[in-house]
Length: 618
Image (tube, rainbow, N blue to C red):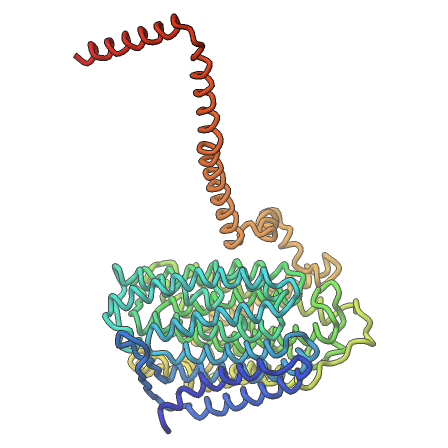
């Protein structure tokens, strides 16, 4: 097969996206099926790449730059995952987006995003990577702004936050090219330390922001409300995670050589632990289906960063396994939220209830997906979390604090289970808050993607050797794994028992909270309004900890100070100087009275002043 075929995963969706923009809005169904056919073709082509390793180098621009693409087992894995979820979400969108406005733009941006992500994953040149990476800002803005009529502010917020992180990425790429003396990613292998560590941190910021880690996360909950729901399943739920964690892994394993002894390892683990806990505690108190899921999309990134940050094989494998698992159950959960929104007409949990009997397939999918993200055995999320736990303990022994990272991750699992028990209870159980006769099961084109994704949660759990041995472990290579496999049941039964104890504790906590409050929606109120947590939650809900809002306040403060200085200078030149000039001229004019005696007196006084100055100088 010709290596130029590597251009197809990039060009096919981008060209098809241009064609999608030519459809009229009344041709929405035709546009939807056209895009579904394109994503199905893309999936078939990407699947044909499996097991291949190719290089494509073409001249690109001046200065000897090269348009370099490289297909490796890692990039192949990401391409295949992106194609699978692109197809499933596009199929889902055919029913969910039917009748919505700006359909041609939605599908056009959808396909552009797939092509740009593929380009960034295949790029073997840092400048080519940056080109595709930055271009995603355009589709991010477009997909958000066509959603809710008031979504423009959210789109601007998303682009500003992502743009700041991408500026850091740009600096990191510039430093890396200078330090390595080449733009070719596969030829860069720098040790950490000194200026190399600074470059690593800048690249790390860009990767983590793309994945949705704190503090570059605050646009995601807003987009959950304002953007079309399939967008949440596509970008924050799937493609952003794949691309961000892919690049974080590349800079940790290939571009730089991260070791457990480096101070960058605990830095990543700290960021991962903080992201897990703070985001999941915000998810716990949400009253809206989509906003609750959006905070979990942030929290789960923490497990991936924690695993990769360990810099030990079990942790890295766990982080990558959790990456694909999260894409599976998080996109699936967003699709259940879309089904509820489409069929019940609301995502406010106070307006839902009793949907389980009216939407049994959606409810069953939700149960399995929620169990997976909570780490319930034998689903996929359980196995990836156990590997991350193991890696945190192993790497933490180097710094004698491994148990703190493990405790943070385990506590995150408690709150994750508690929040999904609350969500499932409020939306699918209890007394219906809508007319049951008006609620029916979602259309088949929405159910099929949900069922397939749910089946993957079971398959990747029960038969975890398939993703681990065929997709993930080859990324590290035999020299890192030393012949060891992490497939099968977790190695430490102690960690498994502790996980089960925590999950049972979350279930008992939910039962007690629901009984105390009288509803599933209020099952977490005792945590929300706890004496020490309530003030913090109150400030968080008023966005006092939002980096974007803090940045706006700082910017407004600087603008006000600059405005005050500008007004002061204007006053000095335009008002004060004029008044002083008028005062002096009026004084001089009044002094000229025409009296000879007065003039002689002025002259004599001036002469005396001149003589005094001369004598003083001598």
